[in-house]
Length: 135
Image (cartoon, rainbow, N blue to C red; front, side, top):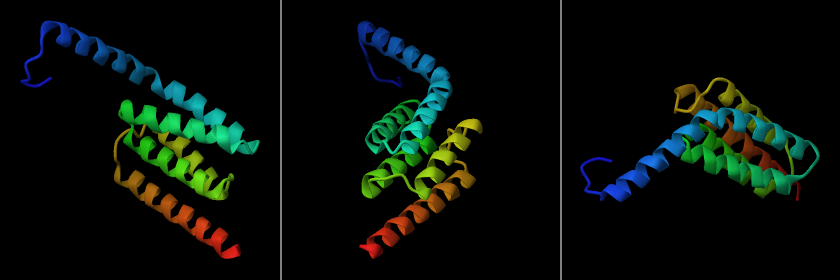
């Protein structure tokens, strides 16, 4: 909390909130795995709307719980699904990459992970441009 002056009541509330976030962070990998499984089912069934809700949820929770790579990739996937309106090869690659990040517990910003995000971003953009060229 740094050198800020908080009242004892506010300090107690902040400490309690911090403990809740710590507990949630410990359980997050298991919840994320379930969310990714559910997202795969939704996308395989063509239920893009439900998958969009899940990607937003994953993006938000990952941001709060200290998983910036998952946050970034879930956001990329969400924006791609919104733009495409359907499940694509790049969507599957992003979803698979989220699973790999989870297995490797890649919460931080490793160089390899940043390269992966960049490559996925290029693939998604290429896919969008190809779809627009067909119109």
